[in-house]
Image 1: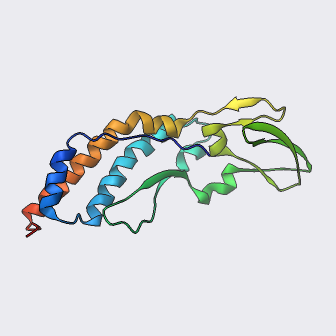
Image 2 (image 1 turned 90 degrees about the vertical axis):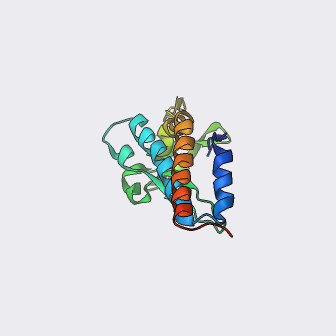
Image 3 (image 1 turned 30 degrees about the vertical axis):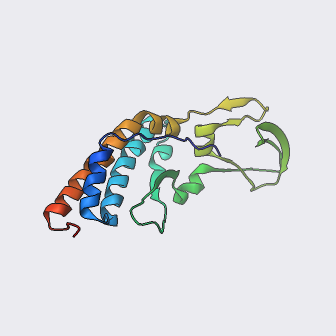
Length: 176
């Protein structure tokens, strides 16, 4: 699976770092809130850009927090809801052959009835090989959403963190 790599250059980071030094350790709840609100921007754009057939693809786009042991870090990923796998997975009706991708090439493989032969969200994002072996390109809607909304995500995270840190400092959370 190919994941998009986007590098962030955050404007206003110097002010944020000064505030962090005044505060000491950042409460994890502030980091979580800022990261979640930033990723919600991308999730909304991905839902808007996703191809529409029945609306299941849009309903299946969710953001999931990764677990981390590092304090002050929170990562959210845009994924497809596993609870909707009954809708998203394509199962073979009978025995036969299907084209699958192996190292970027279409390879003909035998399948049995009931084998999972396709996953709809991934085929729409990255593309797939048709039954005849022709490649159908994907829409790359999640990657494009992340790339197009990166500046808005940066701005949102910095603004929320500055507000939360300033409120924490005003509350008396100053480092001594």
